[in-house]
Amino acid sequence: MALAEPGCPLDGVHRQTSSSLPARYPDRAASIPIASGTEAYRIVVPIRSVVVEEGIVPLVHVESAGGAEVHVTDTGAPHPDAPVVVFGHGLLFSGRMFDAQVEALRGDHRCVTVDWRSQGRSPAAADGHDMDTLLADLLAVLDHLGLGAVHYVGLSMGGFVGMRLAARHPDRVRTLTLLDTSAGPEDPSKRIRYRLMAAVYRRVGIGPLRRPVQRMMFGRTFLAGPRAASVLDAWAGDLRVADRGGTVRAIHGVTDRVPATPALSAVTAPTLVVVGDEDVATPVAKAEAVAAGIADARLAVVRGAGHSSTVEAPDEVTALLRRFLEAHPG
Image (cartoon, rainbow, N blue to C red; front, side):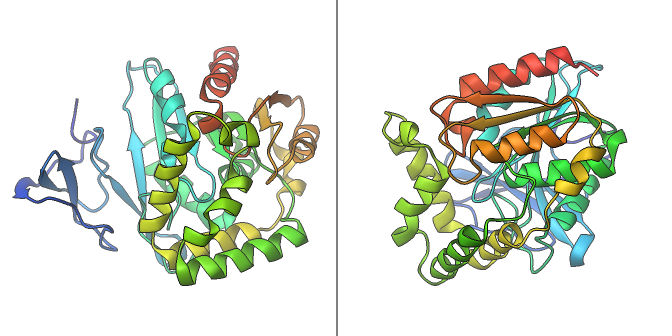
């Protein structure tokens, strides 16, 4: 497997012995640390290069809103004509929430995940957490990777970005899949609650908020199931090490978002809308409104799933996505 995209040569490889890697990456990383057992390696690459290999942490510099570093994973194309699927995650997650879908599709698709600025494995950014700036970040990543029209899959805030992408840049979207999302503004009562919780998180971290937040992010069926403990521990662990200030700015980007409802009629790409029937953050009615606003959109409800359907019901969501992609190869 190639270490870098063609045209992005490695400047050198430096080997270091270390028991751990830094928790955060510098604002303008010119080298990329990699963990391998008890040793750490640092691959030095040009600031704009993207490394394509599992285990390597690639950062793409984007210029919007003062600039930021955006983490990207790219499985590479399994064959020259492989269609490209780009995944945009939900708030308080990362591209890892699509691990099951990437693993299932990578044999015949090039799969790309993007961690929005200040979330997941992307370093904290000082500004630019509104949906329009995240759209600009996404377009910069697509341009950087040399991608034209892609199959876009977005969950929750990833869907907020996806609706804007499909409406404003129809030439970049072959199909649109919207998971557990809404086109409207945040409900006023939820907006107040979320901002209060964000203020508490900024001061003391996820600890005292874990139970109420996980009840919003996951459905009751999943929370009562055998997989919940390990998934929730990993999810909370990521939030414990995240930059709190950056995470709070990302939360505010969601709570204060401008609605995308007026843009729905401009979406022309074949669209699949998926929602868990136990989603309390963006309930089924929100998904129904999205599907009603996009011409010929298809709505699918996943039984026993909450707001994080790709994690809670990975087989069901993957099957829906695969059938949809096969019906619209592009």
